[in-house]
Amino acid sequence: MRLRTDLRLRSAAVLLALTTALAGGVVAAAPAHADINAGSVDLGSSDLLSANSVFLWQSPPTRYIVVLGAKQGTLGQPPAVLQQRMTVGAQLARTHPFNRVIVSGGDTWWLPVSEAQFMNIGLIHRGVPMWQMVNESASTSTVQNAEFTVRMLKSLGATGAVIVTNNFHMPRAMKNFRDAAKAQHANLLFQPAYAG
Image 1 (cartoon, rainbow, N blue to C red):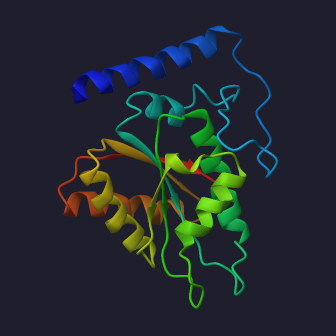
Image 2 (cartoon, rainbow, N blue to C red):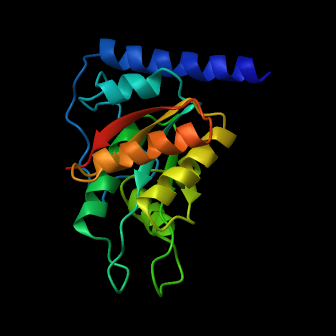
Image 3 (cartoon, rainbow, N blue to C red):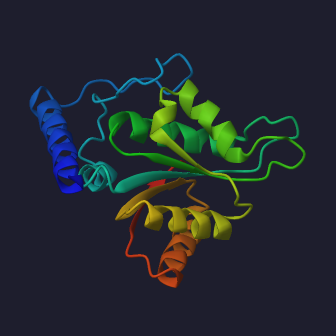
């Protein structure tokens, strides 16, 4: 039964990608600000054939988009680096509606919500439906982001993930995710998605 469902999802994803590519290719990408309709699909994106898109389309039920958190401001305002990560993560999620998004980030000091919960709101404002998101809200560092998210990916039967973070943070994040996968004996592939 699971195999049949996986094959149906893969077939639908491939058909959707091919239909979009054959129907005219590139249309202007949707703006990445808060007036996007929640749950909209951005199939006009020019990155449908990018390395990240190909990676995600290969197996939508087993490939995830992971958006890494960042420390919130004192009153809960997201910093610019997190805004950039959410924008890139939302663009990927709207282009790949069959891939789930893991938002990873825990403690926000004295505030009663996690970074992951703040990112839920930011992604909803950018057009990603709540049902597409999974929260990892226990981590307080990049090492823990990787450790806890890899554990989650392994338990979900994932084969890989696109890691969304900023350029300066990417080398460390990718190393931490690969180290965590090795330590947990998880056969996972990771692909970087740079958020500026």
